[in-house]
Image (cartoon, rainbow, N blue to C red; front, side, top):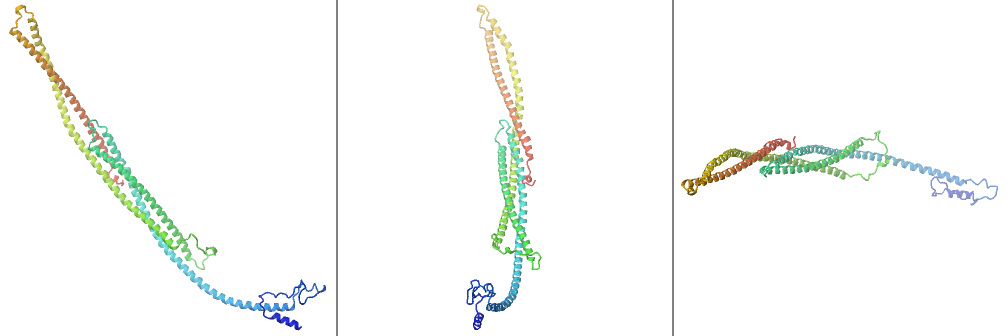
Length: 447
């Protein structure tokens, strides 16, 4: 019994036994080993699954001490839990208020950026419309230059039908060539300016689209943040999203966000100012080209007027000279007829004188005498021959003069016809066609 009490006291002494854990057995029943083992076949079946009494007491004291420790630990945990609940409640409320304030500040920033983008988009859209109107003016002006160019080329082609000697490189032709070259240069300038306007319109639309995309993103983000700002603890739409408390790798920073918007605004404003400068340049080009074309048109018309006056001045005396030449031709024809009649009239006296000489040459013997009558008949024949020679020479000269007069008259008539044709081409063809020249408003692209 004393030995049993000693063992119990040793077992109840403080030992480092884990909570809710039974002490190890002091012996192994299955192996039949230990201080108090029984041997024999009679007790083998009764000790196979049994605990000792000291083991039972040890288990009871262990459960008592475990319950005391659990109660004490639970009371401490309850106190800590109340403090933790209060602290976390205050922290959650403060954090939520701060987050709501940050979302509100973000809403203000997005509203400012959205307003600036919307203003820039509206200005860029209005500027693009104005530039489109200028582009249409350029296209109308380019179409209008086709009429002056066709008029100029038609004038040059018509003047190619002038006849010699009026087919000259006069002041009118030089002005027409200058006008054609001016129109070609203006057309090339207008085409280049149209291409520049098309490129600028494309850039305006690209930056407008970029600003619109940025504005659209800000509108969507503003709507999302506005909805987030209205959430509270009693909202019915809130729910758990466990995996959202992390930063996206592609997320921007406030600095990059602001810089992105400012760069979009800067590029849009830069292109808008470039568009404004281009519109001013287009106004200057259209005004200058219209003035240059009208000035050159006036110069050509003035050259045509002077040329027509020169043709009139040259044609009038030629017409008078042609009439006088025709009158002289008539007089010369009468003179030739008179000369021929005079030659014919000399034939009868010559026949008489030669017949007398012939008959007198048959006088016989001494009667064939060189008397005064013989000398006079010989001198008469010589005088008549000399008169015929003189008359025939004069007739040849008159006939040559008549031919010269006829050639001159023909040349005068041809030259008169040439000048009449030139005057008809310049006045009736060219100047009438030039009446269709576009007005300065049409050349400036307003019509």
